[in-house]
Length: 272
Ligand SMILES: [Fe+2]
Ligand SMILES: [Fe+2]
Image 1 (cartoon, rainbow, N blue to C red):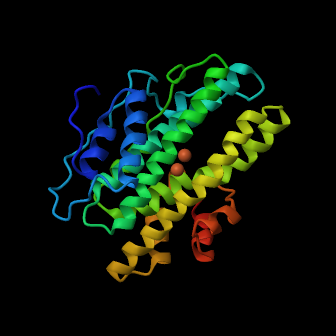
Image 2 (cartoon, protein in one colour):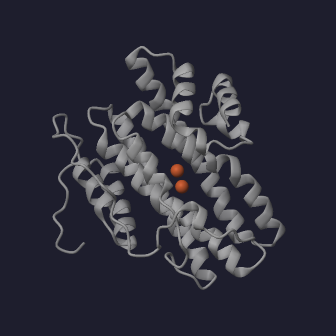
């Protein structure tokens, strides 16, 4: 990171965060560039060259990436199991930093509010990662100690050509999964007396509603611009891309707060 040129635009800043391989580099750069953007620095150029291809964002040498089937299932009952669980969520948050920067980097010519949303979300995800790493360290572990998988970035790549599909499938399917499963995790952790981790997940859950809501807002924006009805389009995108990753039950209240219509909730139930 030292000696790196300061970015002149938001796109350069987003790319620097995507490319950063060290965990601390990615997190520190994300927080710094998000603060600079919020303070009015890092303009979004109207005429910018197209994004350069990204094969894979920068990643640390560990964790080792494995097929999801190879990840051992552990209960929360042991310290090791709880550490593996926290590690899995920390990994999702670190991926979510890249997903948010990619949304800002890849899609050009969007309204100013679009970029403001995804920069704010990248910063939230960096903060979520730090909160989880602190819990992991309290259990004597470090990020990288357990294996992980690359499913989130894979969906990012599949939707790289189409901002509408990206908004439908990354925030509204993958991120939204957190809304469904987190309340149950909070109950379990609290029952085991892990108040600190339960409190972290409560903060994350609340903030994730706003991330999924941003996905809903920009999915609808794309539909409106293209003159497409959002509900049938959402159903079609789910069927084309997401069947394998749709799992109920769905948290209807949180999803309604995040901009899902009745019709979209019905499509989720039918296709899962
Ligand atoms: Fe998050
Ligand atoms: Fe998120």
